[in-house]
Image: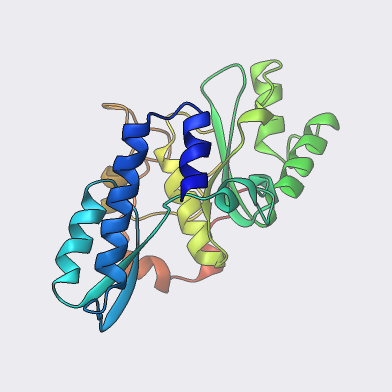
Amino acid sequence: MSKIMDSLSKNGYPKQLVNKVLKRENRTRDVTTGPKAKFSKMISIPYIPELSNFIKRSLRKCGVETMFKPSDSLKRRLVHLKDPMDPLMHSGCVYRIPCGECLKTYVGETKRRVAERIKEHKAAIVHGHSTKSALSQHLVDSGGHVSDWNKVKIMDIEPRFWNRRIKEAIRINQELDPMNRDEGVVLPAQYRPLIAPKDDGATNNFCNRGNNLSLFQTFMSAPLTFFLPSHP
């Protein structure tokens, strides 16, 4: 103990402070290791100043010993077993691509990795295949508007096919000015006010479409005649 005190004194710690800390530590050790300190259970909780000590004193009365553990650690800060995954490497997604020069947006879905679908969109633009991609068609119609590939966003991750198609349709109807040729799955009209664009009074072309089918009738209809494709 004298070596510890000498070392602390040499490093500039006040002797009064050192004595105070050592006395407090000795009192704690006497309480927890004395012959009367018998606990039926032991728990470990994160250390939170003031609150943790109050919990420890309260549990001690019930015969429960409390051990503290740090809420943060060097391992948690320094060790990362896995590198963060590029969002575009996800598969089974609904994604959104904005135009870089106007407010139009494209919403699509794919069971493959989103990065692969983006390559197909880019290839269609380069080769002028406007029938294969709404993004390529927008480039032609707008006189040269290019999509902002740096702002591609994953809207939903959904591996189940029909669930993904329905989510795609909802996302399309929520856009202020979608460049999609159709809305994908045709949603019942009674649900459109709930998923309309957030802007006050704003609607897109698909929100204005009439549809008297109920949700039950939507799913009971023949898929080939009712569920429309989201893209060519």
